[in-house]
Image (cartoon, rainbow over all chains, first blue to last red; front, side, top):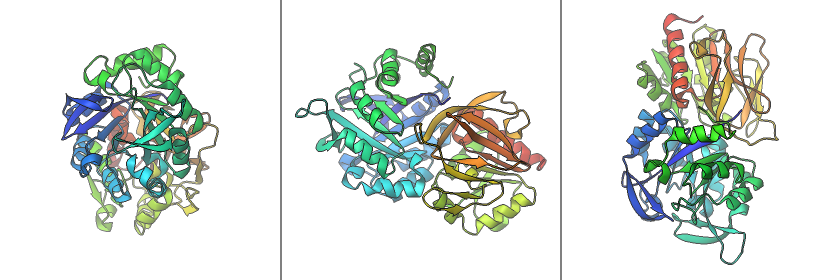
Amino acid sequence: MLTRRIIPCLDVKDNRVVKGVNFLNLRDAGDPVELGARYSDEGADELVFLDITATIRLRKTIVELVEKVAENVFIPFTVGGGIQTVEQMDELLRSGAEKVSVNTAAVANPDLLAEAAQRFGNQCVVLAIDARRSKDRPGKWQVCIKAGSEPTDIDVVEWAIRGEELGAGEILLTSMDADGTKAGYDNELNKAVTDAVNIPVIASGGAGTLEHLYDAIVDGGADAVLMASITHFENYTIMQMKEYLRDRGIPMNL
Amino acid sequence: MIVVIDYNVGNVKSVCNAFKHIGCESKLSKEAGTIENASGIVLPGVAAFGYAINALGPLAELIREFALNGKPLLGICVGYQMLFESSSEYGRHKGLGLVSGNVGPIPPGRVIPHMGWNLVELPEDMDLFAGLGNQKHFYFAHSFCADVKDAGAKIAYTDYGFELAASIQKANIYGTQFHPEKSGKAGLKILQNFYDICKRGAP
């Protein structure tokens, strides 16, 4: 049986891992290669590296970092942040990333998803969605772009469905409202999206306790759970998370 | 020397990194002379099938001959799928035809792609799994899968609501649908086993 995945997320800014609250107030969390290798050794199922400065400063994506990580980490990892073209994706995949994630560029040019899927296969193409609860439309979420700084009128559930149709092989769904708060994932959001699509969904934003992980999988229907604050600052080890979930009946790779 | 086929698709370097990590020498190459003289070759691949087989171009025939000469060949992911006769991913494409069977979409009714770590039952008589016990988790990421029709192929399965062929061995031809280079310690052991197979010559 396919196991549920534990995915530490490394937000990288100027070659350091950082972590904020609601995308702001960043705190240093260490060296990305060292931290990635440590999580891999500790039993993480996968890693996500997000270059969080790339979009805003139009900085080139983190090819060198990907190469270094790939020399030291032998589990899959996804890279995202500022990717705009299929050529950039190709460079990252060839440098050792297993998957690439796109957000802003896919909103600007949805065909990018289709083009990437036909070239790399859809399993390589992750659609990252930064979701914020809509103030005007209760029970709805709006897609935000440019590292969360710019809200759009696009509905998150509709965009997820469209992304799947275009060729995305996975959705990395981040609740901006919950991000960094450690108050739990937004499982209404997770459920709305996992019910609407047939591709795997990674729940992101809000993990604070082991129970939160369980809730995202059981109530939110998430195929994988992503976390940052609670692993970087060593509240819980990967093993503690996996054992807890396994003991509550969730299939885990242990 | 193991040669990893360099053909302009993703993850070729990851396979070399993994060999290097376990102290096994490998070389990334697309040169006919280098490939012909290899002790074994790895055909990796993160790509759509059609893109991959086109990118392989004339190397396809070279790899076929290498395998038909009895030397060890390991196909990974789309490299594994290319061992078969054909695939229906984004169109209709011919494969290397080294193993009977075809590649088609994973049957609907489950989350697709099949993405993540799944438990593979490891038959005792498959060389790649030496020293790994009866079952292990490996990392999968694919939307298409092989329907293996070859009576001469041994098959290891994983359960994804149906029996999914996770790995095959047909004499000197090996393949894994999952990614050993991204499957942690168990995956590295598979690459070590393939290295050992190449060192002692094909079975």
